[in-house]
Image (spheres, rainbow, N blue to C red):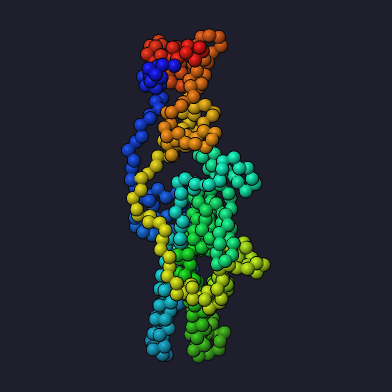
Length: 421
């Protein structure tokens, strides 16, 4: 085949009269904030400064369940502040207000904070394993790179113990020890504890201390309102049942707080146990360290000290950073048209990398190198016999005359003649 004919085919691959055009030119990249194109299910406020989970709307319900009885109690104390002992009523009112405000602050810091999201990879990590290995521990990890195999599980050493870390197909990375992928927020999270629907956020390395403070102060608030509601009843003169029938508000607060304290109090006690043994909720339910040794525990006192005195790790992601937006839709349509019309079954294109892979796993720098022209010849012979037809994907049936002129310029006839020889 002469070089002039090949270059002529490449230049005239698309008919001037075609209704569908494949553009080989790349569009100018657009830069956007990372939070605007983040692939997780998070919700962002104030330009990516606040990071919420997918079900952040549950915060309204949680705020109502906490604030409703707390504010009602404070109003009750405010209305009776001049009765009996004003100093006592002032102290109880101020104490209830402080606990309520702190509880809301810890709730906000738990739900609006990056829990420790692990940055995603755009491509799988490189592997030193040969491509022809076939073992049960090897699987396909990405359909864009079908010749790349990675082990599903790797062994890492933590405090002298062997810990297995898994490969995340969504984030394309080996999760750090104690990290896990949250199916609700669609992120890998450092030291993943659980996804809390009440705060609408994952609980991880960066917001777990605030979560502990939140449930602890919620428990304290329930006990506080429960105790002083009883005090308000007992300080009144008269028969107990008669006083309770007249002070319905205090009775309602007593019943509500008695029920709520079993939930938040039980949760607080459970997490205090987890802290003492240096476990996460996920690890406690999944691995059961009572059956095997926990590689992370350092003793009760050291475990509590690690949580209370250690510095909160910095965020691994700056959601306000400027990044180049990738046009995934353009790549998919481009890949589809090429594979259907021009690419043989011997090669597949990695459009993200701008290269293609052969059977040996090597990359070819340009997607136009070493094209398989069998696809062109197949489209030229759509009808029975020796009669040639044009590219139906480019030229309509009523445009054969125009296409004949284009085919003459492209040198298709001479190209086929040389292939037959």
